[in-house]
Amino acid sequence: MLIKPKMLKRGDRVATVSPSWGGAGESDLKWRYEQGVKRLREVFGLDVVAMPNSLKGSEFIYQNPQARAEDLMTAFKDKNIKAIFVNIGGEDSIRLLPYIDFNVIHDNPKIFIGYSDATVSHLFCHKAGISSFYGPAILVDFAENIEMDPYTIDMVKRTLFSNEVISEIPPANLWTSERLEWIEENKNKRRKMQPNKGYELIQGTGTVKGRLIGGCIEVLEFAKQTEIWPEQKYWEESILFFETSEEKPEPNLLKYWLRNYAAQGILQKAKGIIFGKPQDERYYQEYKDEILTVMNEYNIEDLPILYNLNFGHTEPKFILPYGALAEIDCEKVSFSILESGVE
Image 1: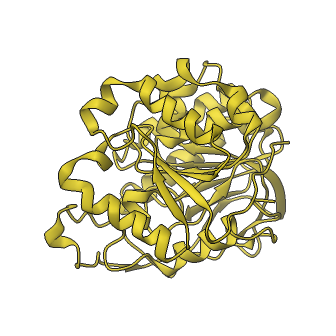
Image 2 (image 1 turned 180 degrees about the horizontal axis):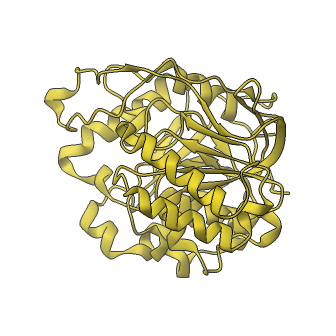
């Protein structure tokens, strides 16, 4: 079992970090970072501090993975910091691995939240034995133009600011992946929202329960066969969560990656799988076809699979606590988290 961190309260101090791309420190994106921080302060009542290296710009951040790791370690060690928010994803946080002290993370359990390449940092937390949170990032969800999406606000409050059972997570009514350039002239321009068709059951019957584990499926590839790849016991009776990035990988890649999970015996150990909405709904049907192909190849056509859930590279989004007990109900086509994410 993973250790649950303590819940957040208004007035708590939280840190922002850049474990991947350093865009939050670029002069032309400073307004975007500050907009995200403003939301943490005004919407959630938090006291926000940037870690020392996190705003030094993308070139410095890229060239100094040790400095990025130091920021993470500093944030975990600081008793006054109650949560760590990732500024943005990227592609190379696997380079932090040599500089991570897993004992520091284990001895200082606190909320860590982000998505995309933050998957690697989630695996740092997982190896250290603490639950972390696959969810919104500063430059994206918190800095949404005009205002944060109410769905995301509700999910942050339900997951991080309450020790009640998270319970059923409904689909968002609307969604967007529209790319509006992050320039100040667009600051007061909303992204176009589209009606959401809700969750889709692509195979399976009945109701299953399992503990959550997963992330961005491309980023998980970086971690295979490293010391942060989860032990076999964590895949047993799990509910896997997978989502694809803004790179919109070709459908055949999804097939190859899923075959690897089957070859490892992971798909056979799982109780169910949830897949996030593909960005722009690109390859929406093709991904489903490839998923079903792999399930057929490995004779696991009874495994419950829900598709088109609101997490990952689409907005708004809900939050997935690693290790939390979750449920897929195939008859209701619903997804629930059966415990609190925090203590």
